[in-house]
Length: 215
Ligand SMILES: C[S@@+](CC[C@H](N)C(=O)[O-])C[C@H]1O[C@@H](n2cnc3c(N)ncnc32)[C@H](O)[C@@H]1O
Image 1: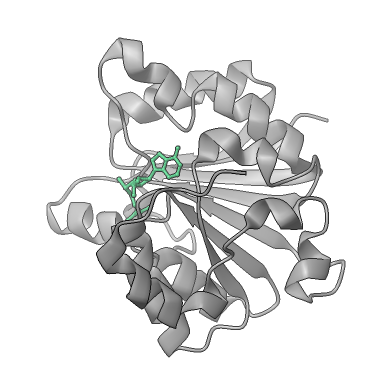
Image 2 (image 1 turned 180 degrees about the horizontal axis):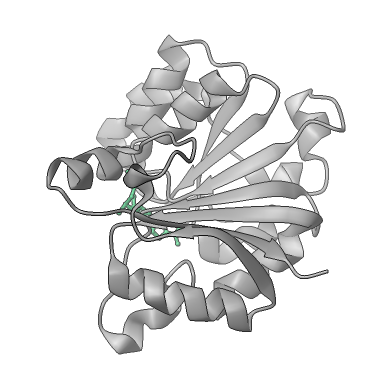
């Protein structure tokens, strides 16, 4: 299995926090809870595109009963979250340097309880829609990897991406709930991400939805 290419100057910093990084995630395929040393009924959450990892760190701290995996393909960003997790000695958070397009290489069907998609890249031109993490191809992939009662929590400031995603979820066999076009004006419990702080400071409304597989 090919590892992601890593910039040389990042290596020493990543090595210092090695215990927080799952270096060969494919080796845990089908045995994540065993590999992480957690009980078989521990909810396993995956954040895809965690950026600098603020949300993953805060969620792991707020919910000690779950285990959080934070996946990101840009090591410069991931490293910041990794170092924060290391400094805080997080027990229930690990980082994965990997591309979400290849999730099936590291998870077996039904291994995940929840997927977070926070401020996913909008990829505006229409011919790049397939790269959107809420494109129906990705939603079909998540469907396989989630438990039957699994869920996806998605939020974004980007209204065209949100409108696109509403259709993709609906047409991919998900049931939507708690849909809002202005999250911060609701009393929905919320942990803010780095991008969310930036957009909120600019006064932009945040859209959010929860998606579950139709029974
Ligand atoms: C706009 S940033 C948001 C970061 C963070 N979630 C936040 O809200 O602050 C989107 C992130 O998703 C990552 N990303 C996009 N596509 C990805 C993929 N296929 N696999 C892994 N990460 C991806 C990008 O590298 C980027 O760091």
